[in-house]
View 1 (cartoon, rainbow, N blue to C red):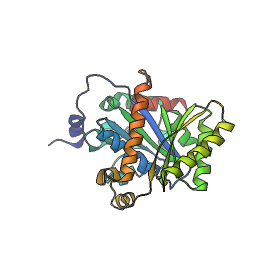
View 2 (tube, one colour):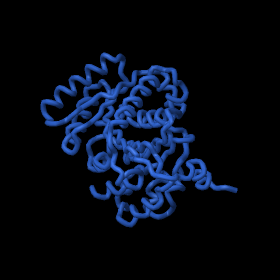
View 3 (cartoon, one colour):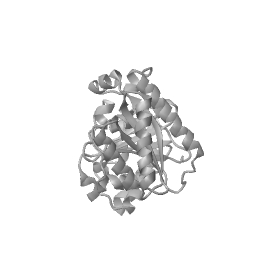
View 4 (cartoon, helix red, strand yellow):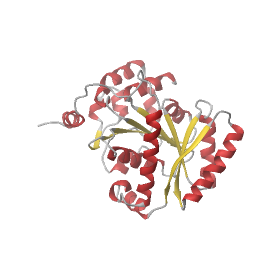
Length: 286
């Protein structure tokens, strides 16, 4: 009888050549703005557009993507770094072309990121060598742990909502990350109208440009308030899957299309690409 790891290898297939994987970190200034829901549903949307996507649950404070996807994670990346199992043993296929890499709800993971553990991880990550996108769902806030994940990524997306405290915290996250990158993207979640999203973005952009030299802050799009999202959350599933015709799902497809358009114009590094290489970058910031 085949075990899960064997079935996973067959499902992903044998890769003949490596792709340049774009590593996208999704973060927020504070919790409760729907960051993880955006990460999961955006990953699913990109998958449905024909791209191979893996999502790494790097929300150290609250690793819960398995609940959002409606699956059960028995082992996490911490078990891999400890040498208790291989990477292929923890990867959860959500469906063809979409995979979850479970994280651990605690900062113990950083105690096991070493040259030896990362070298082993890189050796095992061939199974994910043909990813188009690696989505990193990070923790909220501007703590040191979250920053290490953000600095190791190619692209940074800040999720916020039209709430004064959420906007203030999103601005703080943008300000901190503007020190190390000149391009940051935003997604406005839980908005009532497109006008509301545009107004929040323009005010944020105006303040940011006054205080941060050389920063390009761009709005990728918005996701409106929707009963489909609430229903999907209660049912532990994806709103983009259960109600693809809803306004929220439609707007998420627009966001995905913008990401794809930018990817076509972007030159990704061929030296450091993929899940294992993400941890090589991460090692530099520890």
